[in-house]
Image (cartoon, rainbow, N blue to C red; front, side):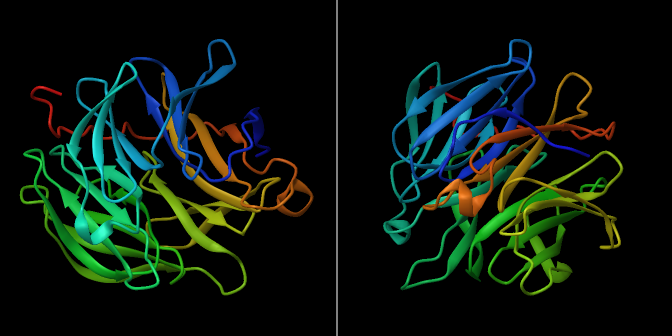
Length: 289
């Protein structure tokens, strides 16, 4: 129950940790600084492997490359240090950027954007053929997503609303419908951020400005709370050969660690013996990319 600091990268906004099962490494992004990092648990070493446009989120492609979701609605495949554009820009997102994303069982990607002073954020769906469509509007900050074990429902987080929603999800079409509230976090206790679902169907939600990671039962009850030495706990993923290693990102946004916590901006590790699920892979733009 005591998180271990394993990579002291002092990220401004560490986010979107993702386990790469063939490389046996975990990747994560520092969004405003435009960096991707990766950590190798076999050696304990970490490194910066990408520097460029801000990456709000990314998925693992079926062939092992990364699919990056960036500023201005840009999307590109990143493979061996090279970028292969899929979408250069979305005109409606010129002053925004992508945030959290998730691949679905069919290789589509649900990808959310930040709000701007002129317009709330949105949730898009990027299909394997490269087409993209709006599936939800009026969002404060589009954030953590996850699927139920039966693949019939989708969890989705709107951070400023302090709500994690639950949608009906059609795996065949990728459509979502029937939004209802799964969890609403108490006022004054931070904001729900990144999310994942474990092999028991429990929902893990990082708590930005709440210094903690929460585990909810499928009925929405708090099963446990794990405290962190960082106010802004942003996201998590399961990894390792048996998917019991948890990797958790944090942020140090424009303040000192004296205010944000001794571990703010670092990557943490936990192993509670709880198994996660392998993430679905995206299958977007594989031909020629």
